[in-house]
Image 1 (spheres, helix red, strand yellow):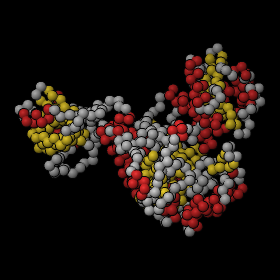
Image 2 (cartoon, rainbow, N blue to C red):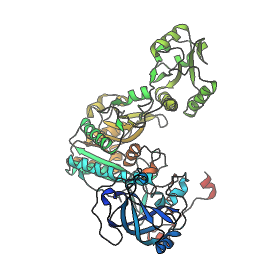
Image 3 (cartoon, rainbow, N blue to C red):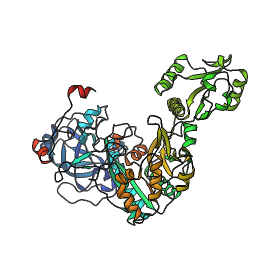
Image 4 (cartoon, rainbow, N blue to C red):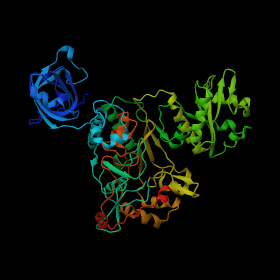
Length: 606
């Protein structure tokens, strides 16, 4: 196990003069002191070998049989005991060199041993990466963090953070810390609330993001702000989202347009990828895809561009079709979509049954398909289609014998999403390159959407974004046609961040909210402090906040975000190691003027 480490000053203290992973042939014949953990211990007929591990790697220690006192002191040591040793660095014979270790050319012949901590038997091994339940790993996270892969992930995260700081500072960004105790926001996810002792009955909230503060910093005259910001949201866990808290590379810039921000972000991701990993970026600058186009082609606003499949619109082919299921969905607002799998037309019935099951899970009533076989087209809808329609399909989609085409029909957005879900489902048929980073920008999000449940126009994304066309667009265009200066950055199907050019003008903000059904009084009561700030001289500004946890997860090729966080919670938002959340003492509740009103058993079940 070798961990690369920056060159460090040699320490001169009673515990350590050198680090295990930094010893090599150049250290021969030196007396050294080392401190670390017993990684492995082996008794070879009188000779005891100990693999000593510290933060930099492993070094082999040798305790010779004539050293009886030393023998007795280490004979019964458990793995992961902490020891300090002094000894002579000697070169190994050529046939004994361990090329897997940075220190593999040498070993240390020990002359003295200090047992600093004799470890009890462990709940799971450190030296061997055996499968261990996540519950046990999280309960004993301090032991889990000793394991090589996880240890390296945390070191890598530290290096990424340092590189981000360096990159942004060199480009004129100023690191500013914003408050952790702030006011509750009615928007977005649930807040974590903190009761105030000095103001009974009132609460602080932990910030979901420093959004308002960073905009106010632009109003305050700082040109470029950033921080590695802790954010808190009371939401459920996912593989790419940690419950409770996460960190983001929070950024905001004054006097910029969308393209200015894109240049900074693309440069930063390119620098981090090339300097910190073996991965490669597919396309640079990153492609920009409008929301409408990305939904039409990929069925998702966070597409994995590595999947070699694209959805195609075939609505026009069925305008006059006798197949009413398709014909009825060719009018405005609806669509007929197709997804072609080359060379998969002869799969077993089970293949199609599983695909249909997945489509139903995604919300479809079923999954129509046509197989193009040697004996002719087959499938549940072939009998409803005429020769002309089949010919047009083959021409438009480039279909050949051996192919299969799947269809979706219905309202535009849900149909796109179902077909996008099927595109992701079929991704397992392809060997995607895990070292390829397919970044893209999703742009031109609609400012508004129609809320079917409330029967009203609603904001579709971020209500504080600047509409494209500004006031003129709000006054002259249909609400559902207005686009916003909003953008997402996506990599390999994972959304790294949303961002926007902000609406810094109160008159435009009042009008934008009015279209969504809010009065001037509504806006003033909820966001009056922001309106007041913008009235007192606000520059055009915009920003973004890429997730640090997700970025590290991608660059380290991890499938679960908990593998790149030192002390994560489990999926139920519990810290098993610290037993949080936990009950508190009655006295603490009295000081906060709080009483606990727990739900009844029947309420809990509901």
